[in-house]
Length: 472
Ligand code: FAD
Image 1 (cartoon, rainbow, N blue to C red):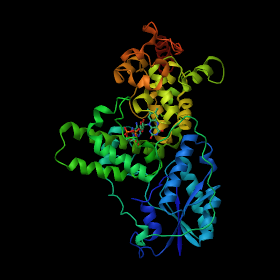
Image 2: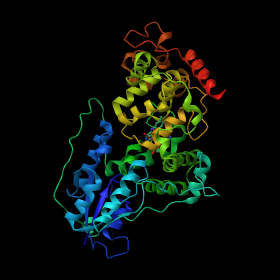
Image 3: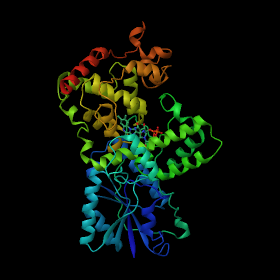
Image 4: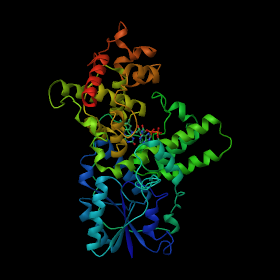
């Protein structure tokens, strides 16, 4: 018989437990005894709301996967509830294998597909997940979910994770890829001026190994400096499952076992592991609280006054923020990096998000939605909880009253103004840290840089006044 492997957020062949299960290489049957039909379904419910950068990334990643399979990837457009059983029927397969999905939409979709498969006399089998520890697994002593990060992170580490699954080798006959006709590739969207790095499993491995060799040792200090390429840029690779986090964690563990690391280097490696834990934590929170993608985790803040962005000044300010012309160099540089690369450095994500919520008084959901449209790594759990964190409504204590100053943040984390000059050409003529304060320099506005849309000190006071209205 044959099995269908329905790829979703697991666009790789290495360390892929669902692939092993589909091919019978997981020890239950002789390896390669079952033909595997590789399938991807372009689901309008996900394709529609994805922005162009994510659509383009996904397509490029699928092409890379298709190449790795020797051209056998079946791509169909439509509702998976119809398409998946249809492809199974065409392939003569009674099993459809997947890596489990833990997002709110993915869970609903998978239950519906599982029912449809059963009605057709087959079954859907989920093996593995996009996380080192599946969401919903890590619990406290009373069996409840963790609500803040640090205890989760400790319990997550105690939980531990499996070592990477054995690689499969198509040429060694471990997987007998099988084809059914029907390839409905969507066209790649026009990205305008946005340039993406290479997508796909090979690119993910390459990016990761370069980071391991050259950067992870200095990650701790470097990760806060947006002008430096000090982070791994693995987020989109992880988002699409081009590499499994378990693979990264195994490499980090091997590094930590290497006795030659100095104290600071060890700490850097541990810090990187903790960042991966944030990704797992936010997925866990979303699994327990599917509504938290839209609803405030701290309901008290839901009734705060926000500016109306549908008309007037509110609409103009939101647009100025989106287009990177707020007159605050660090904010504008961040938003322009978003347009140029469909990615923004983490420090700057916090700065631009804080500015939208606390200086422009726009509700965080508007910013979260814009990020999801524009980011190549847009991920509902990490993004929307990241926004809640900035808005003071998130899981961990980032109290609302702690308002980021966009100017001093810039001066602190981009002291030489390099990041600002790279993304804001109207400020490229300003030397060093002066790029952060064009209003203090005679020729600051000589090249058309916009005036500040609001006064930070005044808006900070306004934000705190609005907070006082709901906290009493
Ligand atoms: P590195 O510093 O190299 O970190 C390694 C990996 O750890 C990342 O690839 C990511 O998978 C994970 N990670 C790091 N920081 C976080 C974090 N705070 N929360 C969750 N996971 C983290 N990350 C996304 O993957 N998708 C998003 O849509 C997203 N939206 C965000 C929105 C806001 C407002 C904020 C403040 C943060 C957001 N992040 C998001 C988290 C973080 O900014 C990015 O993961 C990081 O910048 C990606 O770059 P990197 O791969 O070089 O990160």
